[in-house]
Structures are given as C-alpha cells and as structure tokens.
Amino acid sequence: MEGGDSEKRRGWMRPAIRQKRDQRVFFRPAHRPSFFSSLSPQEFVDVSNQMYIVSKFLFQNPKLISE
Image 1 (cartoon, rainbow, N blue to C red):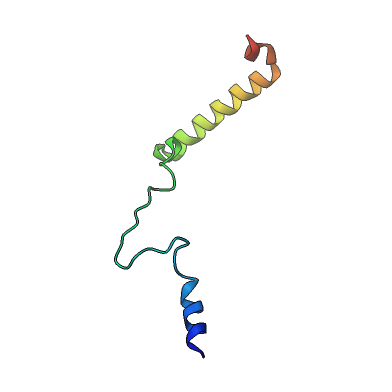
Image 2: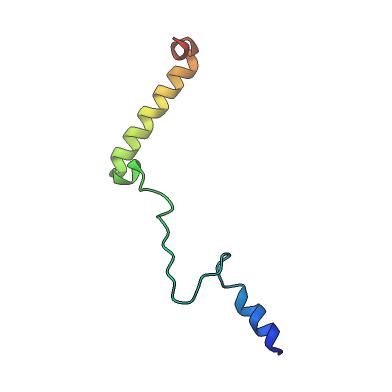
C-alpha cells in the first residue's frame, strides 16, 4: 500500500471542515425531548385519542377553522 492510499483511507473519517489538531468542536443536541416523551403510556394514549377526536371534528366542520 502506498503512503497516499493510507492518507486517503484515513481522510474519509475526518470532518468535512478540517480542524487543527487538539481543537474541539461542540454541537448542540439534534433535538429537544418531545412533550410526549414525558407522558406515561396511558397518558400518551389519552392525549393521542383526544387529538384524533378534535382533528376528526374539525375535518368534518371546516367552517369552524376559518372563523
């Protein structure tokens, strides 16, 4: 294996923007925890059912949305 091949192979693991050695990069979390993740399974089902009922009601009565 040539020296250039070794460098290419290691290069794919580097970040897209190359950083100086020992420089740290910090990222924010990808997302915040959802409101639903704080609910118990039964509470989740209850809220989900309520949301379904409301959306079904509004879909059947579109005039309520525009008012």
